[in-house]
Amino acid sequence: MHLNRTLAASLFLCASAVAADPKPTQESKPTAAVASACAQVPLFQRYARKGMVDTLPEGHVRLSVVTDSHGADCGTPDCYFTSVKAVFHLSTKGGDCRVREVEVSTEEGGCIPEDQRSPPRRESFFTKGAVNLADPELQRLTLRTRKGDRALVILPDNLFYFEDVKAGAPLHTTLPSGDVGEPECCWGASIAASHFLEEGAQ
Image (cartoon, rainbow, N blue to C red; front, side, top):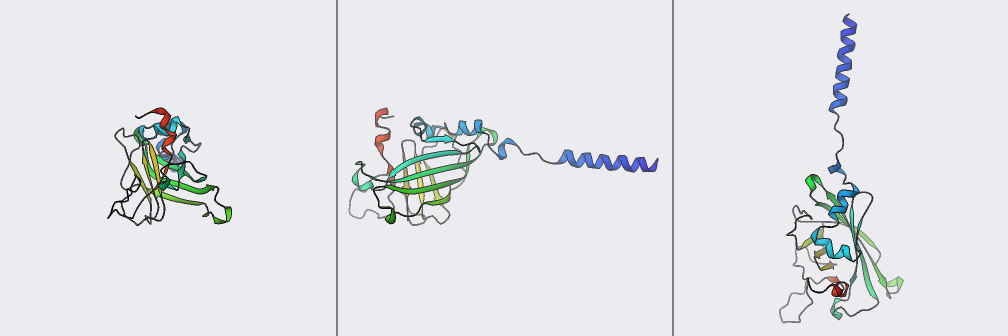
């Protein structure tokens, strides 16, 4: 009888331990359906309409653009470009699309001789503070590397990629005006505005 009580107690403890074992939730790894909703947030809508936003099987969202690294030509089409792919790792608890980190890959292309191109780069970028992509009021998303030497600024109608910037320096999203005293840092390479021209001003 005493043995049976001991065995029963042991079985109860084992069952309790199994029941208490935490199970992973959907929020710990976004599903494709949740990520798809995050890919359609207001900040990404125009990019999505142009086929620049993808939902990945892992539940991440990828934004792929081509930037004009020669911004001083005022957007004149040329054969130089930098491919920028930003994979958003998100926390989707409660229907939010909070940015945990963004894995950014860049690669030069076009008519730059291959032996003169910078090697492809991949690095994690982060927001300053908590950012929820699902916030309908979000009009500007700024991402920087931990060193602060590279950055992305995403607007509803354009994206700017910055290289070799000073940590903490302001990131300009307009072309230099040439005015005396205008700060030298920091000007970004943008995607061509012509990507959205046919849609008209919105």
